[in-house]
Length: 118
Image 1: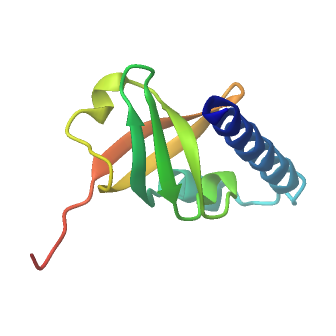
Image 2: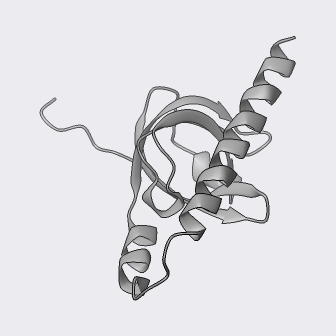
């Protein structure tokens, strides 16, 4: 039952991402190459909700992912390399970059944010 709910959340998040990407693709393509490149270089902030090191997945409560036109939400991502999860823990604040590779959303960069004032 729990696996079914998780699977449903993943499917719904993927469908939402595809719908948003499709809408973004329909926007005009006039001279926005530099702004598109800048958006893809921007990192998104998030809080780690769950780590699955064995399967190379991470659940993040993230802010807007500008390069994908995705609003803030909590969802599961694939990790490009499982070693990227080393040193991370549930509850950590992170910055990350994600790219669409085939049908998957894959985190290509992730770094733990340093807390100031502690």
